Length: 166
Length: 70
Image 1 (cartoon, chains in turn blue, cyan):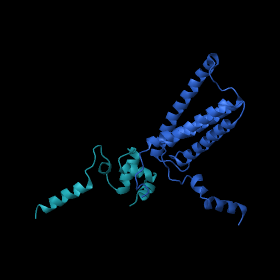
Image 2 (image 1 turned 180 degrees about the horizontal axis):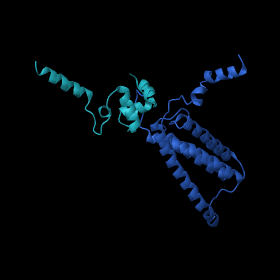
Image 3 (image 1 turned 30 degrees about the horizontal axis):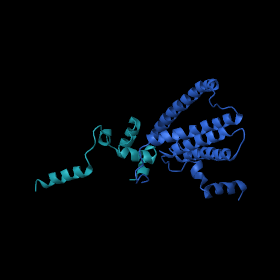
Image 4 (image 1 turned 135 degrees about the vertical axis):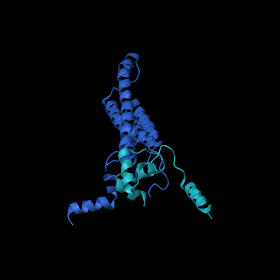
């Protein structure tokens, strides 16, 4: 068997094909995204407080933040279906509404941030200063961009019936 | 017939069929027509603004009506 053939078999043996081709049964996550968001915020705050002189709490923050970042990506994969196989009309409706609401929420936060930044400088409040603060903020927005549609779509989807697989 | 078979026949996810059965999703006209065409019946027989009478009640009424002449 060729190397490509072996790699192909490995994908099926490890059941990675279920993720790659979106064969996983979509689940709804109605509360867990909130926990992940809380972990993201807590991790960011811990890192931002000690970014100049990394200590133990910085690394706890780093683990919290990037752990939450990874979990956000997994929730996106295993949550309501947004990509992969052809979406049917109901899934397209859920996707479009979830992304529309998420877009408004994220844009609102970005807008509030634009107002906050100059004000924080004047009032002596915290603002992202170090390059790492900005990089983490970017990753935070990326994670929120994964989490929010998953969370909103989970509420838009009716609860699954017990015999849904029939 | 399973949900999966019907879903494949009309080109939707089988979860969508489940939601339709439970009244949790209102289909587009196109999907409603596809389902009606699949069963060879009119749309009104499958979808209604008013909830359908439970099948058990229909059968009970039919049985009662069938017993009356005896």
